[in-house]
Length: 464
Figure: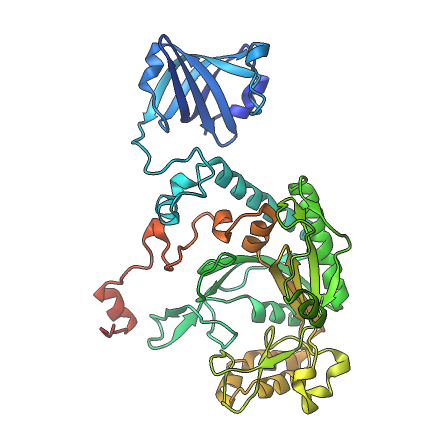
């Protein structure tokens, strides 16, 4: 492990040091060569002799020299190490770099995305992308510390789980041990976190990987995404909103101090009012929508519990129902509207809450149903047949053993960071996202399985 990073050289003036990194740029001035050497901590100028001409951009090098103060008139105020430079004495080329297939000295927005994704390990060298992933790391660490300090327990839930009709297409994984049966990758840990409330943990969270076979768009990558999954027992909707609001208000102040939150406390807008006033249930409340440093958070509440069901709805069961959940089937009805479940379900409000930022829905949650009878009623209203109800038998059985009232929220880490940073796509804040075609380009996935693998799983591919 290298002992010294470039940023550490600020404390090493007049000392001889050895640095490791990449050649960022080279400027040849006949008998003197100026190099910028880069590691993750920053960039340092090296002043070397003619032998340093052997070096070229992106070579991986070991360089030894003496750290000197720069003359006042040559100070570079654009970089943290701009007051110093290295008088280079010797170097070793650890690995020579070929000419890169894409430039990495720009922000990268104008480069074809397929090329950027194919060479993502190079694309991530650009300063903007490196910083985005550093901010992402700092964001998840802040979230963890904030919640642990408030008594939350981080618990991992299974990735291989059960396929259930939850609103989007599942990714299926064949079972070798039980041929003909399949696991599903979780669309969210929704059922597991509710079962953890039955288990008595009361305050749970995890930074969860979630999987949905949905078409990609700017604010949603294909396949997988990351969310803060959070659930609490014995809480009201207001408790959830206040905790979440403090978490992200404090996070912005700490991690993104240049960003300014437009209004605090965040406004709370009913779904009906949002549609009437803004024609959207995720309105952009910024005064200047071109200002990337303005963050207009808001809560949208009082959603209808049900929408009219369509033939394409994933909740479509017996074919006799007219209703589909506007959030998901575990959202509790507003206590004042429970009687309407029998009379006029489309007028029932749900205890759902959406977290909105600059025109994006960056998180959603609700108070959950904890009464098995109400849960059964919701299943009936969305048209579940007996076979579909059996898929949730584990939940209904668990609820007979004493389930506390509970609720939670699941802000999306990718979309939240995209909105905070003003990036055009969630892929700009992810290390190795999928492209629009669904491929993880850098790995050329998905790829065919061998005949031997398919035989072992009891699967036959039908040629179309």
